[in-house]
Image (tube, rainbow, N blue to C red):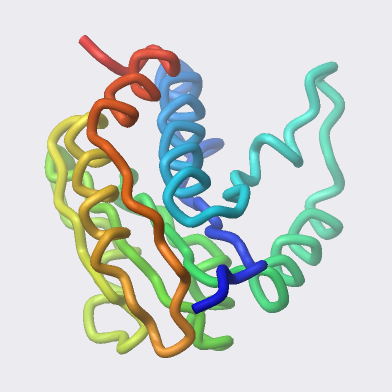
Length: 177
């Protein structure tokens, strides 16, 4: 089976989070992307790495939304949704569901109430796995296991991964305790 040229797409709340949670969340998304890249053989797409500008310049929201939509419709084989804010529902979820892109939902069990994204996805046939996690490290390890078992109708060819490599990724991203 050939490796898909499409990539995984990592999405979740960022701007909606309190300022002190944004940098650890960025690193978490990057660590998830690194795991997906390593296991799936194509570079994962992590939006903030492409659309957030270092010099403080604010990207044009409409242009970003169009680019994200196009990316999901044409270049994405799997959407990883991190539901870590109660009120967040990303446009990416609706776009993925409309375009039959498989979804893996990572749900932060520490939230005081169930995220709206989790409720939206509850009965969707596009959701291939739901991962409930208490720590970022746990989410990364569970995602690795889910990717090993992932086989949508248009499957990716997944390579074997090692938990040691994931622990190294989390340490490099500053996520380990």
